[in-house]
Length: 436
Ligand code: IMP
Image 1 (tube, rainbow, N blue to C red):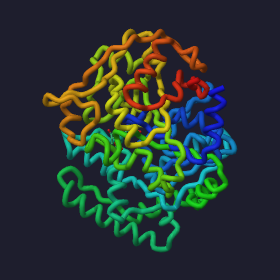
Image 2 (image 1 turned 60 degrees about the horizontal axis):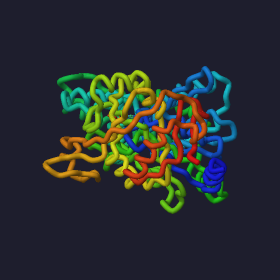
Image 3 (image 1 turned 135 degrees about the vertical axis):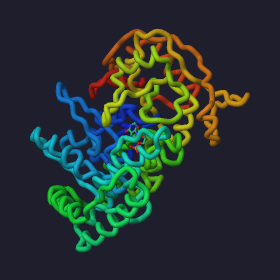
Image 4 (image 1 turned 90 degrees about the horizontal axis):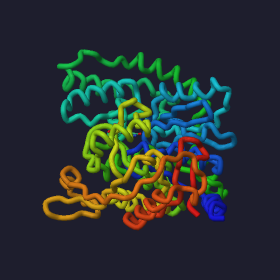
């Protein structure tokens, strides 16, 4: 009955935003994939090829970095909105992956999306080299340097590829890049960027991408006005948000729900539902504070069973216990109307589970995340231990979930204030138990 209610609820609201509540890799792709068939369009609104979704179709495994998961759903339009950092080389490879399987793509890309150019990827690496021990652990996908050019208002947008002054624009941008290479990186490289070659490569890519470029803004708003269901797919997670995450160990975009507004061009009142995706534990790749990191034995166990290796870089993800102060913080930042807990099956059969309920720092207890970042860096997590649950997989009814897991969900709800709508119980698109 309640499943029916939830489906009805999801189907009468026009805009749903799906965002990660932790450091990314919460399993947003699987949830978007399972909700996509009920939507008329799925909009990717921020991030770039630093993100990675793994989508399972029987034996077939697809890895997407830029394409929304909806590309595998017939009759669902996929949109890449203007806030996305667009790496055309990688996007064209992803499109080919789908075309090789003889699937049609109903994809529209905003001409205002900004380009990640090959030298941005290279400069990402140079920057990390320069940081040495202090490196951020980026994905080397050029996100920081490309976003810097965007914000400094010298970046190249997809639509610029179709304008007459493209070569001049590239020369101006590259002139500056070469001056930076000369001034800042001359000790590590003598290489320079050739604007003419970049121009010629971009012209080739332009012809391959041309048919996908369109007016996403009016498509999105027409769909909203027609009361169609629009799903907005976030990338990364709230703790990687440029402003509210573990700065500077964050990505270069806003990853919280409000980002859907500024990056796809909506007002907050047009969003009806914000779904937060939270793993039953937490993971993190790259550098930066990670208060609830598990000890080595647990870390290894969860990493192996949960296949916790980056979809973009293959790096092992560190695993930690669920952090209630961070979940409550994410709830406040995003205004979750509901949360879906993922990978609860991974903790099954592992014994008792720890949950962090507050942090201690300098003699004070913090249940809410403060703005003072020293507390993030040095706070000592305070844990409670809860009964675990047996190994299981693929359960689709809430009442069939192990009792220990249902109690865990009750505890998470009462301590963090979020409302858990469902638990994802395996990698398959139907492996999800909605709460009754
Ligand atoms: P960048 O986004 O490549 O600049 O990387 C900045 C930080 O964000 C690094 O710690 C990355 O590991 C992390 N990061 C970026 N995208 C993702 C993601 O999709 N999942 C998890 N971590 C990510």
